[in-house]
Amino acid sequence: MTQSLSGPTVSVIIPVHNGGDKFRRCLLSVKALRTPPDEVIVVADGNSDDSWRVAEEFHMRVLRRPVQGGPARARNLGAHNAKGDILFFIDADVTVPHDAIEQILNSFQNDPDLDALIGSYDDEPFESNFLSQYKNLLHHYVHQTSNKEAFTFWGACGAIRHDVFLKTGGFDEKYRYPSIEDIDLGYRLKKAGYKIHLLKHLRVKHLKHWGILSLLKADFFYRALPWTDLILNEGRIIDDLNLKRSSRISAIAVIILPLTLTGSMFSTWFLTPTVFLMVLLLGLNWDLYRFFKDKRGLGFTVKTIPWHWFYFFYSSLAFAIGYLKFQIKRLWKKKRVFYEQ
Picture (cartoon, rainbow, N blue to C red):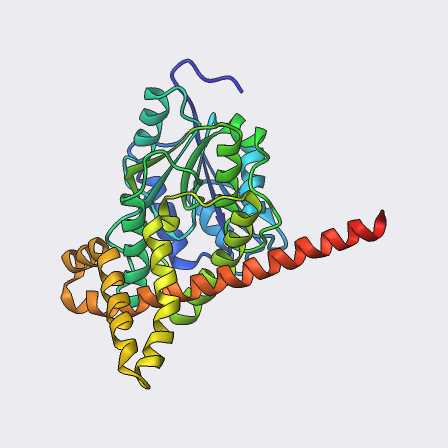
């Protein structure tokens, strides 16, 4: 794809399924960009609330899918119809900062070897309830303390060269729901030798409301389980983002902690390992809890700790289930090969 003489062109691609008022806020932020993109493509993915009409009100290009196929398929459709040298993917439930396009263009122009970049959520989540604040601030902290050289992509705020996206096959459409289709793309990009940066100053505001059921469903079924499968198929764990060594040790500690707590009810011998594990968990995650305290105060921080430890628990459970399924598949394949010989 040829690049214009004045610099690379940018296509913004937004998949939406029943976006509601938050989608309107997203489009308002896109319209308010200080440097406008060369085009905005909204892919209406089987909407029943006429979100596509909102996009037309803003005079944006609309592609409509009659049946919901998931964000991976919607983003791919947008990408294959885009004209820009750079594809900037955002979710329908975020607002972008006014200088987003400038940050993206400067990054690609200052580093000709850069193939893709991702941003993060900001530290001022839109929804005020505890779980929404906790979840989005956790995401912000994890990204802001991770390596600049990223190993993954992020569909909520990620830019990639159009030709690189096409060469790597885009998003895997087997992911029918918002899942790890962006992480999967990032793994393939890195395997192919492409360069991804985490641009820590590129921050979008997340508008999503998280409740107990929606959070657990997304974290366990749509992220932890498929990510475990991806990790096991790749055969390695990268020491970054949610997979840092401190997080993995925390996960092991949280799995053991209920056993020592139960044991302490029958024998004082178990009190020592119980206290040790609690101190270990606090120590490993101290910087995060200090961040929570600085942002929302001591009371908020105290409430986050059991939720954070619970996060480690169900993530570990998902990994155990995923590992078991992976080994059963391997044994089944070996058995089939044996009988076919």
